[in-house]
Each structure stands twice: as structure tokens, then as C-alpha cells.
Length: 340
Image 1 (cartoon, rainbow, N blue to C red):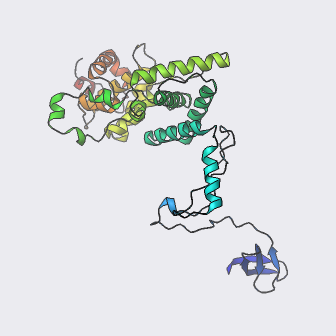
Image 2: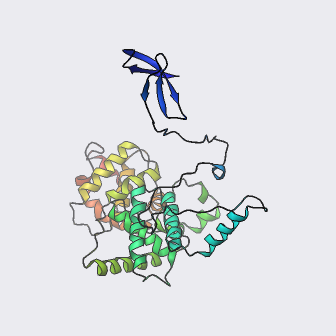
């Protein structure tokens, strides 16, 4: 039985019965077939929470992938259960392993990009764009002999830039070098809740310089192929600000003030990188709020060296009254800012 549905013979709403074998919806009172050959869109199997994904009996695969030769819809014959497997299945399995899959390297590359994107918390559109970039470069047959992890990380970096969600290349190893030996010796490094996770930290050991060189190589190759410059998107300090503030656990009021200060700083002629400007603005805002953050913590959260933050702060300090919103700090409050 199911909820009521209008029956034209009974002239009213009646309960209906679903005949799953025929796909018919039948009126329970007069027997009229209200809908015939309907498609059951529910799952064919029930999967319980305590069952592992490997035992999932669902027979459907993933979505089609236009970047693969067969669209990702090829048939894969699984190995027979137990040692005494069926002869036909084992023979087909052997033939399958003998056959060459032209997309095997692409599938592995796409899987690595997906793992990197998941660890960075990136959306599916960035992952798909990175797959497209790698497919174009792989078709040129010009990446053989190069560091594969650096190439994949560079594709992900370019995709982030093109989707206006830029990430820094700076990795965990570079950030750890900024921490003093005394700080590490006391064993409190693991207590910090906000290490930034950027491209280099998920590149399976690829160095920052390798990723940078791979990025320049990919852009150059694609520009030659397309015959025009490659659109990379413009990086602004505001692109990193909210993520950095989240790492530091800043309040919403402080985050809004920092965003407004960053927007106003773009009107100034300050020749610093967007990341260092974002870090300097955060340092300035935290000095004016109750939740003050030491410079070392800001350096760890943003991946910018302390000396670079000081230099950027020195450039922004004379314009503090112009960029800091009046609703967040009054003129006399700006005197509490430390002199650079």
C-alpha cells in the first residue's frame, strides 16, 4: 500500500498498490492500472552502515568520463572468489590482464589528482579542470621523464588559479623551517591547530621548486599548442584571507574588518605579493582586537616568513587610518599599533 492517488474511475483519491514485478501502480479499490511500466529508481540492494564498501553488491559503476578513450565505461572482470574459481571467469580475467589499457596511466593520474584535491578540500570543478589540463599535456607526449607528482600538483595549482580559488605552492616543509629549534624542542609543535595545507604539502614529496618549474613548463607547452596566452586568473589578497583567518580562529567581526582592509589596500601602490599583504593585514587587525595573535602564529598559518610580514606591515602602517574600517577601530585606537 502507498499514499493516496486520484483514480479517474473512482472519481476520488484512493490508496494504490505497487506491483514491482510489472512496474504497475494499481488502484486498491477498482483495480485500475494508474501507471504502467514505471521505473524503480531506488537502490537494488540495501547497504547497511556496518558493512564495508568492498562488500557493496551494487552493480553500477561511476559516471562517464569524456577524457578517457572508452568514456570510463569499460567492463572489468573481477577475480573469482577462492582458489577454485570458475574456468571461464579465470580465462577472461587472464585475457583482461594481457590486454593493454591505453587509459591506465590517465586513470592513475586522475586518481592521484582526486586524492590531492580531497586533502586540500577542493570542489569537484577544480578537480575536473586539473584533469583536463593534465589530459592536454599528456596528449602532447612531452612530460615523459619529468617528476609525475610535480606535474600533477602543477595541474592542480593552475586549475585553482583558473577557477579563482588560488592556493599557495608553499609546503609544510617550508613552514616548519620557520619554527625555532627551541619551539620544536619543547614538543609543542603538534599542539598548533592551524597548519596551512597547500599544494606542496599534498604533492607526495615534490619540492616547491619542482612544482614551480612544472607549472611554467605546462603553461608554456599549452600556450604553444593553443597559439595564445593561457588565462591564469589574477591573484588578490582577499583570495587567501578568509582561509588564513579560519586557520587562526578569528572572530567574524575581525574577519570582516580584515576583508575590508584588504580591499582598500588594493587602491594603494604597495608592491608586495598578495599573500604577504594578507598576512600583514591580519597582523594589523589582530593587534587592534581582543584576540591578539603573535607574529609567529600568523607566519605558521599563512606560510609567510616573519621578516616578510614585518616588511609588508611596514609598508601598510602609514595607511592604517585609510584601510582599517572606522567601525572596527577609532582613530585613537590606531595608536595601539606597534611601530614597524
